[in-house]
Length: 116
Image 1: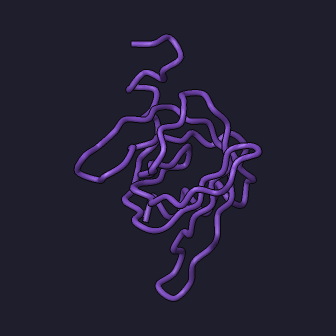
Image 2 (image 1 turned 45 degrees about the horizontal axis):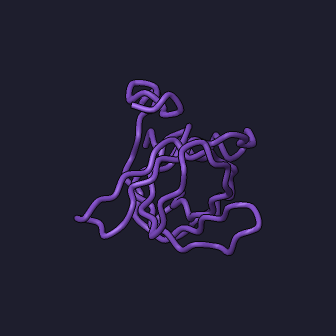
């Protein structure tokens, strides 16, 4: 295991909840990449991406969070790639993202979504 990788027990400090939908990933000076969300926690997001980003790379991620049956909120966050593994079942790379700078309001929305 490379020394840059986040250990599995460190990746699961917060409860995760399934979140299936479209998302948009962007690395500095690169075009936006369409991705799909898999799950979310207060500390990060799991996505399926058509690219294999390197561990530790900083990015911006944008996705919809359903906070009410008739209402979604767009979440935009900065994050770091914690891992990226190809999965044939999903026809892409399962990418783990760790949020790096969430506003208190955004963190509150994520916690409420995960805990409901």
